[in-house]
View 1 (cartoon, one colour):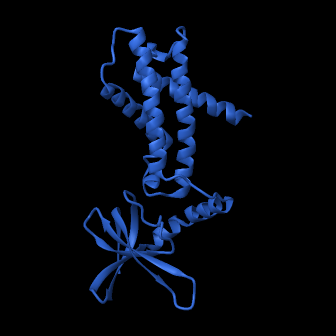
View 2: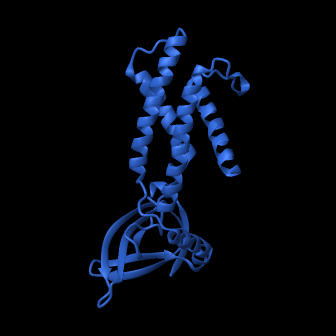
View 3: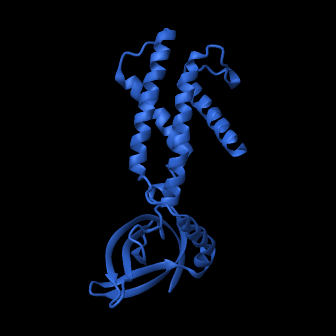
Length: 229
């Protein structure tokens, strides 16, 4: 049996097997690693979080045989198992807290992209009405919307490896963060009516970066107020 450290590039569902006379089902996945290693692993959940794409693990590799010939069976090494004991305990505690539904990453991204486009439109309207810079194409609005959407996605944690691999607890936390950030962005856009409002380092409010800076400041204020009660 070989032990090595790998970085996962692909983990795709292969098949499942129910243990006879029980309700226990084992799910098998095909795995590929950055160094070219290919094989299979098993877990007790079809929405597996055992091997996440982009993450690094120390694994043991055992050569097994089935009807198709030899293949590599991949599992955590003993060292990796010990390292992850605390993580499993934490995950079980989160599960015991319970929640019925977690929005998928694609659903949250759809919501953020819509709210970002709305914010971009409001920002462009204000800029066009108060400066010499004119908005003449929807693509200009879309470009600004893309910047705002990326800011919220990065800041909320939706671009994490865990969220991209649909880990429920991570998606739940990132979605909560994104809600606060979207609300902060709307408040920042509303503040454009305050002509006397100043930003650090002399940034202009009538700019995409200025709105991003103010959104971060407002988010910090909201979180401080909430945590202080």
